[in-house]
Image (cartoon, rainbow over all chains, first blue to last red; front, side, top):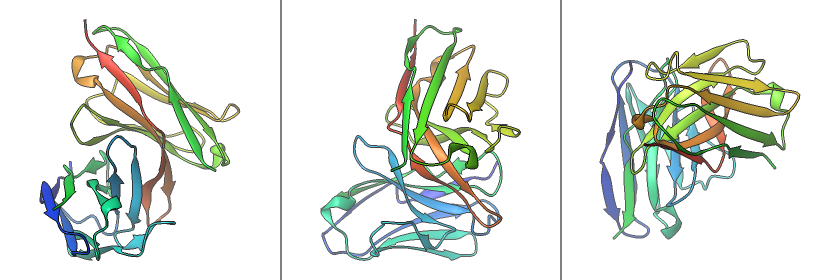
Length: 107
Length: 121
């Protein structure tokens, strides 16, 4: 199984700050990587697909990047509504595997 | 508007069965693959199973293989998850998801609100 090592586990940042979350894949997964945001008490929502493509309706302050087998989600100017838990997902091969999640809070 | 509405959850004893349903609307159900993703209380997300748009292909995580069956009725725009021989570790919120699959991408673009399944005596 492909392991997705996500970091940090939790993060506290100030409004307007730049936030970066990373996922390290245990092997090459190409661009078969997506990011999801789960707000408190809600279902997850798609943010990024294909490692770098922004999903419809997602604010442009969110962006995704890739460097080899390391994938990053960046929030350029943190807003209050961005609090929640963020997950990466690899869909290169079954079983599909999620990262362990990053809990984002406002400082 | 795409809507996915799960139903059928609740409390069930270990070893018993339960069937979840997901009613889809707002899109042509028969054109899309679908999946179930679960989340144990206070835990992260875990992919459970996927079914192709026409039901001809199914995929499962090892821990549910042989116990769970994903299926669909395209005439009713409904996705199912039959869960047999339930274990305490199957306790979770189960999400129905629509998947988007191309030669370059695979991801879950819409999620239902989730249905809770509690396996306990």
